[in-house]
Image (tube, rainbow, N blue to C red; front, side, top):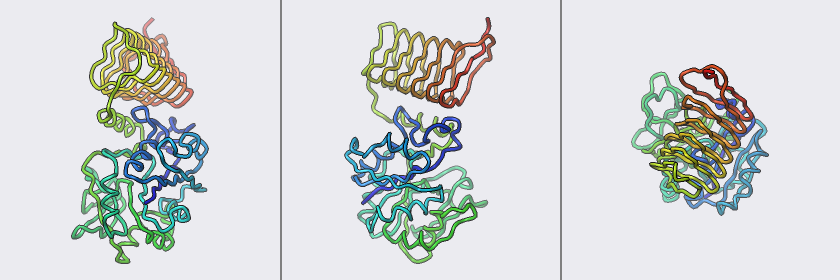
Length: 357
């Protein structure tokens, strides 16, 4: 089998974080989401992976490389415009050939990986298998309707859903999908929709089955989703302390402190992760917080947040929480003081926090 990862989206819902960088490279628990996707595919035994790229192709190629760090072989497939998931499959035919493949959206995070899904598809005679999960508000998603264990209909954001099984963004196909993507026409959005291609397979009598995922799954397309994914992954990963913690600091719970990081006269409560060469001085880092590499936090408090590399948070006397802070951001004090701070700051931002003189 082969893998196909879609990484061509612009990530407008994550602006301003993604205004200067690819959304798939925003880290969750100090690891880019795209890296987690590639690892999940490799853990399932798939080493040939195609990555569909768009406007951020150069950045993604520089970050991912040839795949050798994962023991994989990466092929980049340029998509001239975001013309739909089925279009991404269509332009990948030369890479995929007649092999079965898994298609994984590059900004999705899923609990426990996809190894069991891949094994089930490999051992079956299915033409297509779609990962579904139960959701509380199915009218907000693409929804699958089932009959006798098979998918019979896909409906995008139905007003009156007949099931609560939403499409997750992970799909398995054999070569018959190329018949489908070449037969369908663009939707009202001007895109070739993967739901239309799957519905074509259903209508033509091909074997299209569900795989119902019982764990958590998150599309990290918005700041709140990114923070939720960070919270869930931090609680799941194996933690370790490799950096320096002085005798005046307290570290409790599931905490990772990476090499070169220094914790000085501070409190770190997990789940949390502190990146390489980061300094935490006279500060508090609370649960569900990821601090990336080469960050400085001094005289401040932060929790349930993500801070990207080379940022500085200095002398903030009110706690920062539920925030997504970009690269090379500087947050310092100003003369007046509110009671709380919540923010999403893009790369290279400068913010003065008001305080009492």
